[in-house]
Length: 363
Image 1 (cartoon, helix red, strand yellow):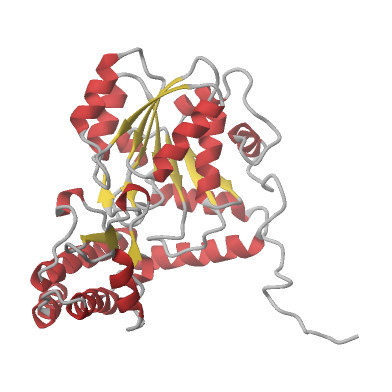
Image 2 (cartoon, helix red, strand yellow; image 1 turned 45 degrees about the vertical axis):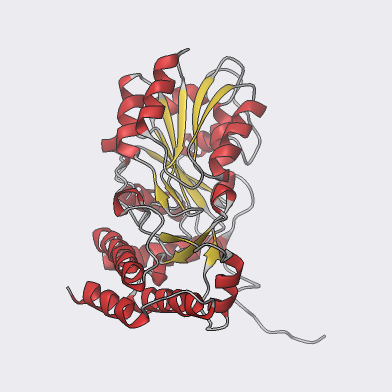
């Protein structure tokens, strides 16, 4: 029999059960959360759906803030479970307006759950999370925050903000694997999740994960995914070595340098800095230029740009997330964008853009 030899990817050792609790506590420190953190052996979309499925039931009333397909999906999952859902939908590719949230809350009837995405990788926008949470907190509403595209790139202090459920994935600013995710869950959220008929025996059951907490946080439900957790540990090691504040500052610098470069280029960013994500910068296309054309042109230079998704398909996104939040990537993104614009017959001051980016990183 031919011996293929041992390979870590084929024969990874089991992940030690006692280290799940340690990982959960390390994530809690990143989230500035002293309460419960549970781990899901699947990508963050599964954790988001688990939150919706575990909350939804007939009689529950939810206000769902929609700024991307993810928000739309969350509302669908809640409705499927019997909840009454009112969507507040932002203008295409733009953040939610706080006045629209206040108006919806005041219109009645009373709301039990409010759901919102913090930062949107689909369009590069940042929703006004502190203001939204303040409105919800004043009304005793349980809040669900999709922080997958913001954790590590923006300040996210779960306890101070009063977030009841925060859903994160480590694959973006934290630079970790995509196949594992986590949720922080407050006592108020647990009270609602466990109230009568909570789903059980499912990967979408937060009640099952409450059992993991109650049993001493040993082996997780389901089949272990050791490679994902070893990779998550490595990502957490890097975050802790760099320092979370430095990681956030690195993303903020990458975002501001990208905006400075685009402004000098003559392209400009889709939204102003106060409404923009630190992980992705979106650019509106000149009249007559399709995003696919610019993306293909940049690709021939070996630079990967992407179109917006959902309602933001008219935008091109420059990614400066995780290890890409660095001078070299920011420079290559903007230069490739400028080169693609020139090839399509549009003016672009590439030298000025490179100078602006260098100046941002030199300060």
